[in-house]
Length: 89
Image 1 (tube, rainbow, N blue to C red):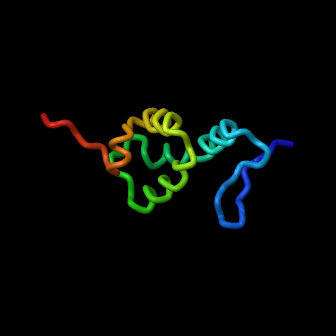
Image 2 (image 1 turned 30 degrees about the vertical axis):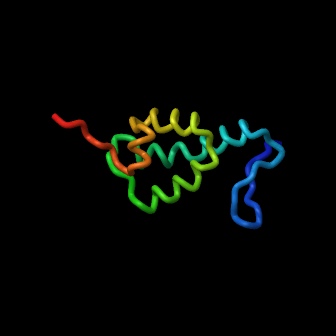
């Protein structure tokens, strides 16, 4: 039986008998469809989604976060800002 992340009493997701890398990959696999639906070919993140994503992505390494955002066409700076800044013509 596969170990899956569980929630602790405080509501935080914690790994159960998994290494940090395995937990991170599971978390990225779970959040990727939601990020895809809201970020791919999009230029703005709704504020409430940004708060939710910040909370979840705080548990992911910087390298993992960067790779995930890059796959949707976002830079870390754009994500932190909440929108994709268009280059001046």
